[in-house]
Image (tube, rainbow, N blue to C red; front, side, top):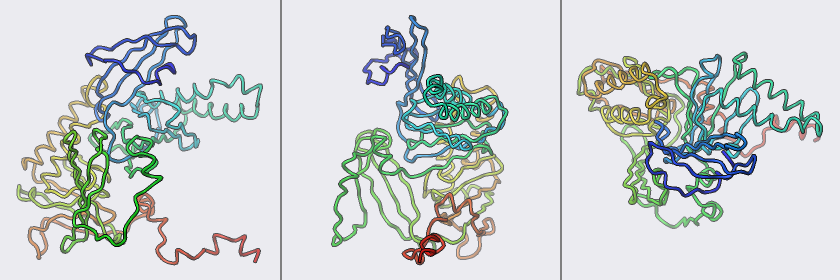
Amino acid sequence: MSDSANEPIFVDIGDSSRPSEIESLCMQCHENGTTRLLLTKIPHFKEVIVMAFECDHCGFRNNELQSAGTIAEKGHTVTCKINDKEDLNRQLVKSDYASVKFLELDLEIPSSSKRGLLTTVEGILSNAIEDLAESQAVRKHVDENLYNQIQAVITKLEAYKDGSEPFTVRIDDPSGNSYIENLCLPAQDPKLEVRWYQRTPEQDVQLGLRAQEDIDNPPEENEDDEVPEVMSFPSNCSHCSRPSETNMHVLDIPHFKEVIIMATNCQHCGYKSNEVKAGGAISPLGKRITLNMTDADDLSRDILKSETCGLSIPEINLELTPGTLGGRFTTVEGLLRQVHEELDQRAPFLQGDSASEESRTRWKTFLDKLQQVADGEHLPCTLILNDPLSNSYLQNLYAPDDDPEMSTETYERDFETNESLGLNDMKLENYEKKDEDDHPMEEASQ
């Protein structure tokens, strides 16, 4: 797209099924070309504006994509291992705020360098090669050493593009609106890893959710003020981005632990959300709860699913990674219906022209089975909650006796799990003392 497209364009897109055309300046030959705008909807990426520019004078063509939807409640990273041509053909959505990194090369494409894209993994490689090779002829005469270094990177990227060398690509998107196609749906793709995280205040400013003044001048805290039973603090609605209020209450669940209940109700667009977060100390062991659901009564059990908890039902190939849906306090039936609604509305690349008939049929069969489980028609089956922080709870209908249909086991977390949770870097004892091993030069000088 020409650079003129970076300026705000106020145009009535009109019928979303037909593109609108506007005249804009070509930055190659400085003649007038044509920009076509189409408002469409990509599943799991919400509404987008597809823009394509073409110049009839010099033949220059370009296209880009801008998100017209809402920002997710959390940011996320999507990591995919690329081993063959099939992986190179994975569809990829990159939002305006996302950065792309090739881990083995330690090469990162920052969010400011490109606009939103709807392409494939091979396409993102082609864009990177094209950008790096743009000024190579000039660099060869001005700085030959820099030319050779960049040429080595281009050669490596071309090997990735040809499929002759495996690599790993990672998208870091604070808006949570970037995706790489899952080729194993409805099962989890072993080559694909998605991790959700809380945005920093600086990232909220980048997304336009907060003002820089709120960070530079935080409100003063009064230690004498008593903490109210229900606390309220200002926030921005994740759907319409207008100011709203979030209420928070700390609740102590008997025989379990302390939890924090958060609820948001937007007065402008009517959006409502609620989430449960675990409070108190971090458990030294993880917990895995297995429930054999044999009748409809099991669907009425209370369940507290924390944001670090993974959920799976092997009989229907359902597997939710930690972070999906956030924290929820509901019933088993309510949780399964929330999962069904979320997957039905936000399934990536399974609707429209991008999905094959085989993928649609396989996905519909999976959703039908999930619906049958929630209705109590696909029983018996097994519900597994795996929470590395032991912050999840499933009601025991036979309390205080043991539940014959439910088993609970604890386990030690491995290094990778602790690393993903940020526990390996925590130092709770003697954290003010300097470790002599970290300062060998100081010790030698003394």
